[in-house]
Length: 330
Ligand code: DGY
Image 1 (cartoon, rainbow, N blue to C red):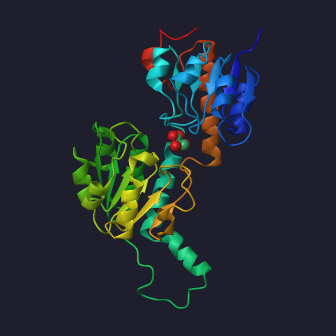
Image 2: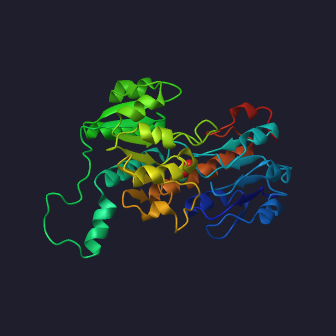
Image 3: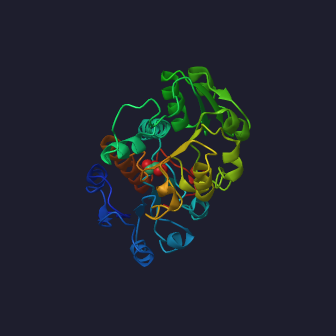
């Protein structure tokens, strides 16, 4: 019997490909760049399953070019690269990779928080530049992490892992979200604030864990940054467009806030001549929050298993449009 045809839009860890190969006719776009638009449109023409990375936008035009497509299995927990309503309208199930990257992403978020507060990258550049001459009581002073107030914006899985880590540092945890998290309140003593403004005003550290939605695009701009303390640190490992970078640049330059740690930016990649890169109080890493060997393998295995389930007509575990099930393409 002919195997279903599957396209992976750029290379993923072998674990996922090994799981797929026996069952499908597999094409993997070589390298780490998404396919040019025209190639993508050609590749999907007789496709049964698509496994895109977050770097590859999948919109209605791509779906219309793929009349046999039965499943889109995203290699990411975020799925803002996919037009999910368009997929649902066409009966195409969409899946993501939640759960397996929660702790790893929280680890990196906390790393950025600590590195920005204690000026780690700046201090390391100082040593490498041969500027370390003597122990100096006023050298490279940062902000205390222990005992400070952590403001979590978005108390989902990753937000809760941040709360857990914060407790280890004797921090007070406050949070805002559209829905309350009884688990975070009970387990970590997190205090709920309906208003983002109150979190911004009270927190010493603000960490963003929201999906990218119309209502979270530009959530942190000039007005919000001005509400924060001059000693505060902003951390973003969610999606770049949640923070307005021009406003952040001004806030960091003028001392409106103390520092920032960013894993995500808008645009991505951030151009090498971006003004933020001239600032010592901004740490920027290239969207690596889930980048551990173990987690990237787990994401590949989960994306593969969601894809295979969809091809077999079984309900995938991580459907992001469950309303499609029953009306989906067979
Ligand atoms: C995701 O999964 O959405 C992250 O941004 C990459 O791991």
